[in-house]
Length: 140
Image (cartoon, rainbow, N blue to C red; front, side, top):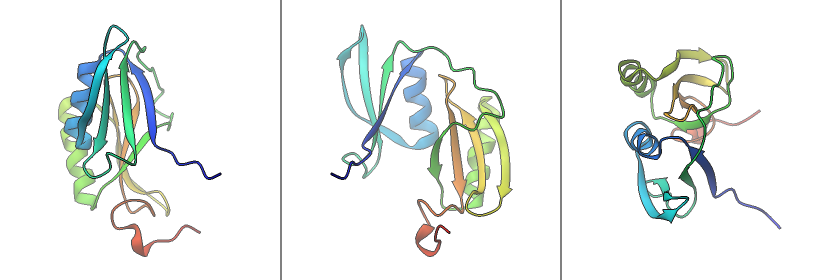
């Protein structure tokens, strides 16, 4: 048996705000929605990954009050440091930037962190051995 991670499901206090956040900052799309939990349940995925990994977002959660030094997060890889800086600038304007862009030794790379409307932290990184541009990098 070889399990495969296919989704993360999360309850959120404001479904619409979270859907909008993941559309605007993470380029995720709504790929399915259905009635449930007194509102609707939304499935979101990155383009081309609809059959491999999704977020299931449901109403009814509580706001996460994570500390600034809590590094629990969802991680998204970007193709350049400039893209990390661009996301950080947009997040700064939107008031949801929690970790300014920073550079750390391999395998962490260059990253910033945002807070989604439910309080989850979302990292955007470049230079990790995962995601775009990782073909030439190896974990040691």
